[in-house]
Length: 397
Ligand code: CTP
Image 1 (spheres, protein in one colour):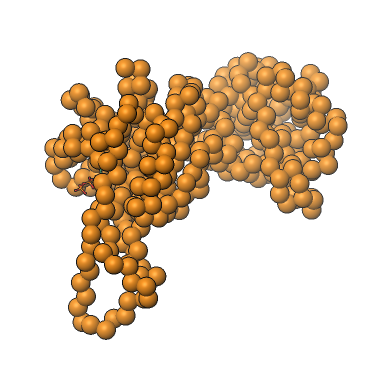
Image 2 (cartoon, helix red, strand yellow):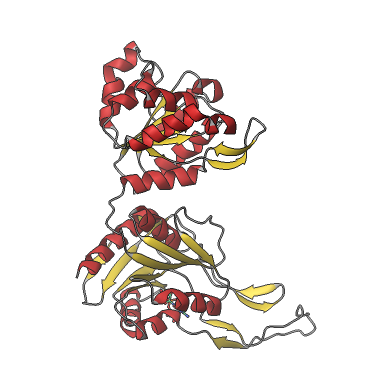
C-alpha cells in the first residue's frame, strides 16, 4: 500500500518516542521509504542509531549539518515527502507549528512541506487538556493538518487520562488512509476471514490452518481507501484492523447467521474465510474419553455460505477464494460458476510463498466473463490492493 511512497517521520521528545520505532518498522515493512527527523529532546529517549538501522537512511538531527546539508537539507526533506508524519508530537511542537515558529530541523521542515501532515500528539493529560494546548490543536485542525487524537489510559507520568499515543498499528492505518486513493468511498464491503472451528466436545474442535492474514489485509486496505468495512472473523491471532467493524464468530453456522444479517446492506462480499465444509454430527456434552481402541467420527455437511449468497444476489458483487492443491484453474472455474460469483481468487496453496500463514500470496484472478489474470508473488497487502483495483472496475460497470 505504501510501496514507492516517501514518508518523513518526525520524532519529538516524549516518552512515547519508543513507539515510533515500531511505527517505523511497520512503514518500512510496507515498503515505504522513510526518512527520520529527530529533535534534540527525542534523542534523550531513543538513540538515532535505532532509527537509522531500521530506516536504512541517516537520521536527520541538525539544522546546520555540513555533511547532511549537501544531500538533504530541511527543504529537500520537506519537498520529497508524500506524507509528513510526527509521532509523538509534543505540546511544544504543536505550539510552535500553530504559531508559525520554526527553530529546529523538525519545525522548519514541517513549515516547508506541502505534503499532508499527520500529527500524533502525546503528553501528560493535564498538558493535553490545557487551554493553550487545546487552542493550538484546534488552530492546526482548522489549518488543514491531520491530528490523530491521543487515547486515554495509564500515562508514563503516573496520571490516568487522555494523552497516550495510539498504537503504532493505528497510526500506520491512518497514514495508509491519507496516502491511499479514496476510490472506495461510500462502498460497503463485507469480508470474511480466518478459519471456522467446529466443536467436537468441550475441549476439542475441527478446523484448518487459515491464519486470516489475507482477509484482514483486504479489510485494512479497503478501509484505508474509504470503504465502510465489516469484517466477520473466525478465531485468529490478529488484532482487529483500525477503522473496521470486526465481528468475531467461531463456527460456520455462526458465520452464516452474521453474513445473513449483513448481506442486504452491502455492495460487495469477499469470502476469504476458510469455512469448514463439515461439522461433527453430534457435539459431546462431556469430554470424550479414550475407552475404545478405535474411534470414528460422524460428520455432517455445513451449508455452503457463499453459494447461498450467490443464489440470493440482488446486485452485490461476490468474490470468492479457491484454495487448491491441484487443477487450480479448473477447480476455481467450477466454483466461480457454481457459486454465481463475479470474481474468484485462485490460490495454489502448495506454491512457494503462497497459502496459509504466509506473508505473501501468489494468485490468479478469474472473472465471470472468462477473463483471467495472473499476479506475481506479492505481499498480502499488495494482493489486497490489486484485488480491490479490480473490484473498483467491476463497481463502475
Ligand atoms: N465457502 C463457503 N462455505 C463453505 C465452504 C466454502 O462460503 N462451506 C467459500 C469460501 O469462503 C471460499 C469459497 O467458498 O470463498 C471456496 O472455498 P473452498 O474451500 O476453496 O472450496 P469449497 O467450495 O469448500 O470446495 P472444496 O472444499 O470441495 O474444494
